[in-house]
Image (cartoon, rainbow, N blue to C red; front, side, top):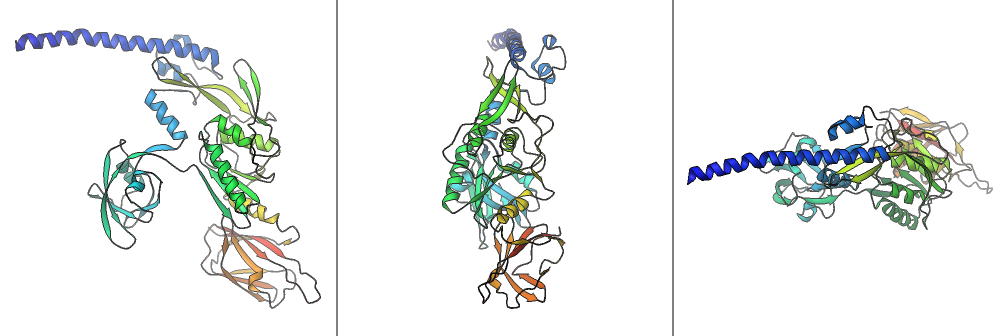
Length: 459
């Protein structure tokens, strides 16, 4: 009987395998036909080859632009998760440390959060294996894995004790929108991705900062590679004067797309930060606001991706991501392969100049002195003043602001026409500062004019 059974299995397999392969081949050919039809009808761009002669999906994709691609159902889900900053792991932000791997942040509702891991803990072993001397990349590869699986961490706590915790990997979402109130009631909001809920997250932070007293704003789109176009349309509606979101040219028509108006607005002098990695929806928003004088752009010329992609679900649940249009700002200036040039170009992080300029608007009756550049002494600043200073200048009349942050504690002393400023801690290399000297009321009720200047520390 065993011989008969094995013969049956062999024969059955012999017939099944060719049938399965033929079925798979037939399915791919049907997909190839479907994809060709979609491309012929909707693709905007150059086709490098004879589309009708292509026999495989890979052949077709190789003929299209770099932004068009094919996703299996799982790859599509992973791609959409990446836009929404969702991933699977234990949910920590890490950096290298001499004792192991230092945990900088624990993401709320992640596996690490649920397991009692806290910022400041140091991972010294994973699954019983020491990680002292390992890179963050090596460590990350050990921490990621399938949802529901566990990883064992040995942790060194800030009080010197150690513990071992079994952490369950789970899906979590990285913080996309973050905010801070900078010196001078300047609200700072950064966004990493145009996620599906991105506009509502920004709106929430805008309202909260206004409630805390923010009167001007900096909106950071550096390193933001784009995402949902609908989110861009909603974000544009948060800015005054912005009526048109973008101009779109598709295969068979052109459109003028309006913003989705919001009931809360950024102020007109809001400063947008961009760099060479700000792409796609980031450029769409930047161009829209710049063209309509709704904000001021700072930083570097953006990436130059002025092409819009659409997603087409195919017969087997897989997806075609296809370039279906080219967009520009309301003025029609080309973005694709050119980028958006900011109003104010900077060689250093644009947050410094943007914060400085935001503060300048609050002191319009002050005198701006010549800036100090490449200052090498982090423990003392000597500022030469081109006019007489009162010898008993009060320390509380002098402020040193770390641009992009807050006030730095200092002591100040007048020596002739020099102002000597000593910070409580050494100033940071490459950091930029604003020195503010406020006016002092004289006996005759005459007000001395205040002044300020920009200071850049040597890197």
